[in-house]
Length: 299
Ligand SMILES: Nc1nc2c(ncn2[C@@H]2O[C@H](COP(=O)(O)OP(=O)(O)OP(=O)(O)O)[C@@H](O)[C@H]2O)c(=O)[nH]1
Ligand SMILES: [Mg+2]
Image (cartoon, rainbow, N blue to C red; front, side):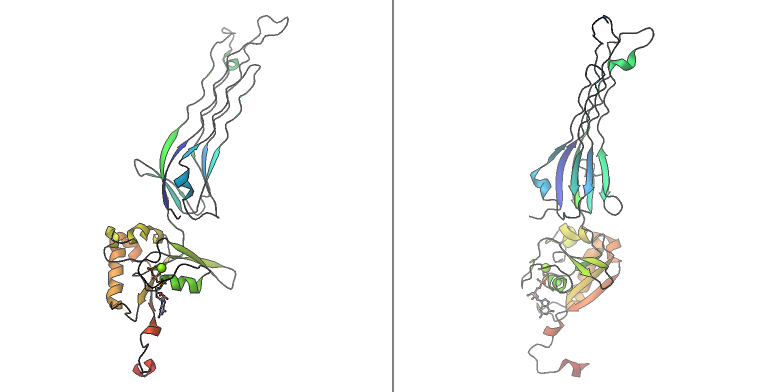
């Protein structure tokens, strides 16, 4: 199952408490303080994993806690540090605070790894508090508390080119012809229910990514159909390929379709509407299908 949103809870490790103890050795009746320091709590770290492309895992596991630091011990023994927890996410994951919606991190581009909550520092053992006037301190510092956060993760696919258009105009077919992707193609609306990504390999070794999203319909920007859910996946594309059914196989007017889709894009995010857009007239083979007329004669 594809998921591009998830709510999770994260908690960093508490710092271990410092220890209070005194040296006890044969022939040393009143040894000095030897309470060790507590270990540091583990941090919660997010990291991009190139092999991932959905947030599905976060639907199953919603709680992510780093380990607490251990308490300090006798004989100046330092407590063990708690282990960090590393949460792997697909590139393009935006991390927001659940309640406020404030963006905490955007896992994309240069930002491959980010600590979201750092672990509590371990407390000092009582050995640190000995002074000339207080040689037997019975105080040790407690470890810093853990921190917690409820997060909202949102995946905004990172693609260079976005495919937009009404349902059934042939977006997935186009993706399947120019990239390695093998999306589902069928002659009905909303065949594509989740974004598909495909890579175009160029001769010079480079390449770029095309995202195919579910078809848009009038009112998509207000939540009609599936479109709105997925418009954010084209927010980061550099160019849009706007496919139209030039043969009007479903009786719609391709020119009116262009305006209708652009109106939805504009309503969703004016910046997207002004991005470079290539209008691709698809299904041109069907324009003259069945007609005796040679299309070239009409030009
Ligand atoms: N005649 C003709 N049919 C095409 C062409 N491109 C796609 N089709 C057909 O159009 C139908 C829809 O194609 P899809 O690629 O699934 O369309 P889509 O835009 O991805 O549709 P949704 O995912 O529902 O939005 C399929 O039956 C395709 O075989 C074309 O160039 N010519
Ligand atoms: Mg499709």
